[in-house]
Image (cartoon, rainbow, N blue to C red; front, side, top):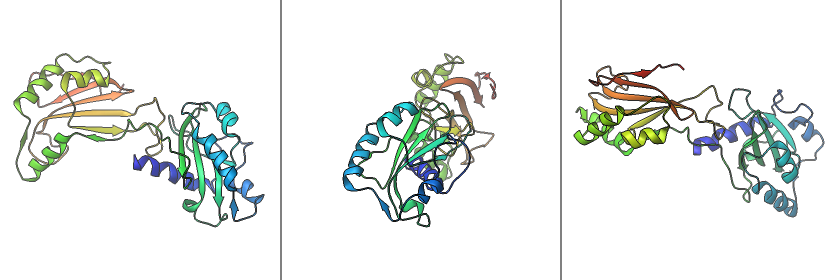
Length: 266
């Protein structure tokens, strides 16, 4: 979660000087907004509370028109990325700013992120205490189960890891009932929780994801591992790859009796 917040705030920090082309070209940029302001700039306490309350009431998924009606127009806008499923446009509402030359990270503002389709995807607060963050979807964060730590500890001691017989039996039996197109929950109900999950982006900006657009994920079930090398060709494991939470590739490695399903590219 911290990585997601940091990424959005990093984008927000760059927004104070950025002039590109992703948002509505008629909306002001920071240079235009700052040219008409006297610094240091600060909203009075009453206006800060009113604006904070309006921004706090926003719901992810709202349209640009709904946001504008609820919170008013932003002070200025800045571009995100035109990559698929990334934050394409940011609206910034300024509460306090010491001036164009001041550190962007010390400015007080609320940043709203919108998709290319104009849906609100994130609400991030930078030093505005009465606005709670509503970060983008976190389903694409890497995951490591408790077994991952145990495996690493065994390998770190110079020993080979072998999954318990009950675990191996469940994974093997579950695999025999897999079919392409199954959802993540269905797969976990058959095989149990994976030992780890790799995350692959679709060209998004950092870890800024759009809700409802899960990333490509790979579940890893380790049956035997002799070294800490993550690509050890002697490792016996099952790799299950999902896109939009649907299984499209199942690849056993060194697991006798199990066949590959699907292909690495859709």
